[in-house]
Image (cartoon, rainbow, N blue to C red; front, side, top):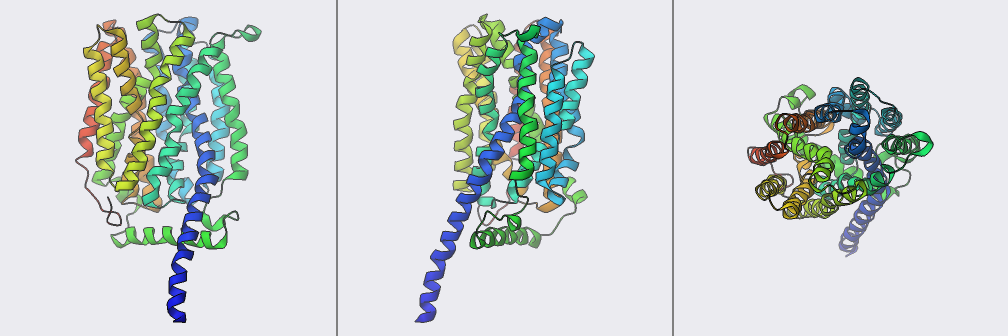
Length: 439
């Protein structure tokens, strides 16, 4: 009887510890990581808003601007894999802090450019400074959240992408209208968005904890529960055969995931960097109005992204949740091009397309972590993100190049339609792998 009572009472105790641990970890980490990525994304894409005045002010052609916007990802590409492995093997806290501080200073330097060469160099070094941040956070989430909870946690983190545009659009619109101390507003945009990154880098050293075992802010029972759960997940993956870093990078599905992400980011950044300019030239509205309208795709995208993460975890399904969003991105843009003679209806579908450009991420980033762990997962995530980052270079550059050659954005938008549709199709070539009987 005593034994039975002990068994009955132990289950609620474990369940209570699990629920408390999940809530405490989420409250402690996700808001802070969200703020870090919000600042990161603002610093990455503020050039799209600055371009409304910068190109005219400095005499940059569309081709020069597109190359400068995209060359960020050339620097980004070089250091992604090492950065992700450093987070896994050394210290997420210290490496993320280093990244924040260095990219904050480089963002401020972007405000000082005058020539195309300086613009290219500053954007390249900004990419190099930020490299490793995104895959590092994806790896860091695997230190704290179980596979079945990770898409929801990721959705809250990834939602910083659309929210950065929602916040950044009106902020940029207001700054573009100032001329403080003889300095034009587009330069202030880089200065005022670089300073918070440096401050948050210092805060990161004191706030983040690398592993649950080191978390003094977790009670013993909760620390033991999450550590045990993550160890069981690691053991389940090891049972199917551990991979070295080299073996993981050569995996068919890792290569496919890199190509899928490359094509997805061609569309994402092609849209992200050029949508304000497309909107401005199509409507002739003042900068503040343009930046307010430019926030709409991302405001809608927040809700689509959070729903995707929640439903993906609820059902345990990853591939359809990724592919359908990518397909809708291309389909809505195709309708927008087809309705080119109806300005506002066409723009409405372009806004719907923009809402889908980032919403695939919560389910997508659970695909590599479903079958890889530790350094193999870190290196693979770094590879996927670095190759994807090249899509961030190709997208803006090709859009600008086609615009220069044709005098119209139509061919550029057709290019951005094809990329996410191909990406969606490739998702279904991935192997369906069960994770705890769920994927």
